[in-house]
Structures are given as structure tokens and as C-alpha cells.
Length: 86
Image (cartoon, rainbow, N blue to C red):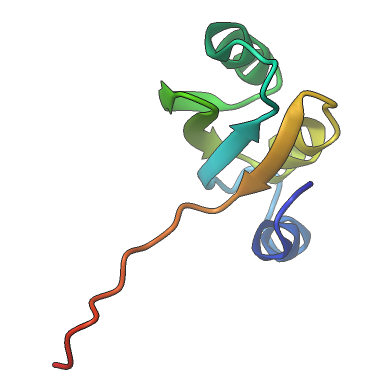
């Protein structure tokens, strides 16, 4: 599943445009193996941890990654917002 925000970006961006994405993995997938697969699909991996991989992608890479059965979701990075009023 590709998050709606990334779907919109894929439609509007050029094939060479890049952005950061978080790939959430299904529970049975080994992270090291997933990193290799994601690199082969076009992701420039910047970090990985339990259950997810973060990296830079192009619109075609997002489409390829989103079709994989071992991928739970492809999302944009989350931003933290302050709860304080400023």
C-alpha cells in the first residue's frame, strides 16, 4: 500500500524527482534482505531498523516497491509537531 500523499507526489513529480520514504515491512521479512531488495528496486537506503527501512526514492521506485507482497506500506516520513502554542 502506498500512502495517498506519496501517490499524489508520484502523479505530479517527474521520474527523476526524489524524496524520502519509509517502507514498512511485513512481520516475516528480514530487514537485511529487504534492504537488498529495496536497493535493487531503486531505493537509496539511508537507515533501517526493526520492521522498516528509510531511504530516497523516485516515483518509479515508489510504484515498484508498493507492488511487492512483502511490503506492508510505503509512507512519507512523519514530522513531529510541537504541542506548545507559540
